[in-house]
Image (cartoon, rainbow, N blue to C red; front, side, top):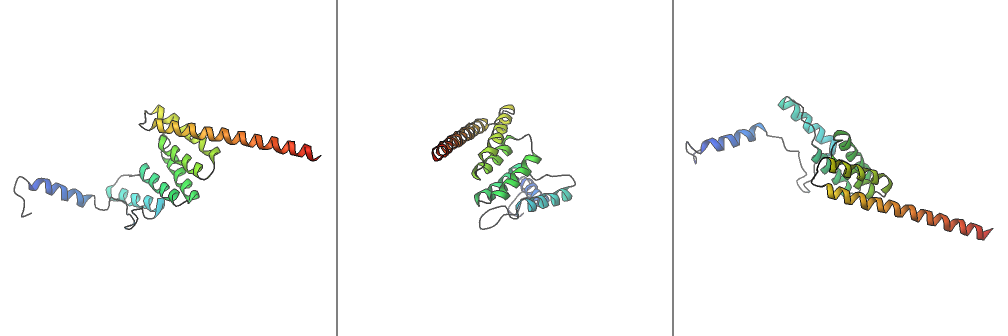
Length: 170
C-alpha cells in the first residue's frame, strides 16, 4: 500500500483482511431490481454454505426471509408470500414482526378472518417484548378486527334480507 505509512496501514490492512474473510457473505441480488435472487430456497442454500465455510450454524435471518416474502407480496404472488411468511413464523415464533407480516399477506389476499388473530398475536408479542413497533401492531389488529366485525355484520344483514325475500316469495 504505497499511499499508506506505518501508522495508517494497519486500518486498511484490517479492512481488506475482513473483506477477504467475509467474501461472499452478502446474499446475491438481481442487478436490475435489487431483489434477493432465488427466493427462500436460495437464501437457505446461501446460509448453509456460509455455515460450512465458517464452521458454525448461520441461520437465514428473519429480516431477509421477511424481505423475500414482501418481494412475493409485491408481485401479488400471495401463495408464495404466505408460505414464506409462515416459514418465518416457524423459525422465529417469538418475533411480533413475523406474525404481522403473515397477517398482512392474508389481509391483502382477502382473508381478514385469518389475518386478525395473527395481528392480535403480533400485538401481544410486541407489547410483551417492548417492541418499538408495538403501536403499529396494535393499530393493525384494531383495523383488522374492525373489518372482521363489519364483514360479520354485513353477512348477517345480507342473510336477513335473503330471509325476508324468501318469505315474500312464498
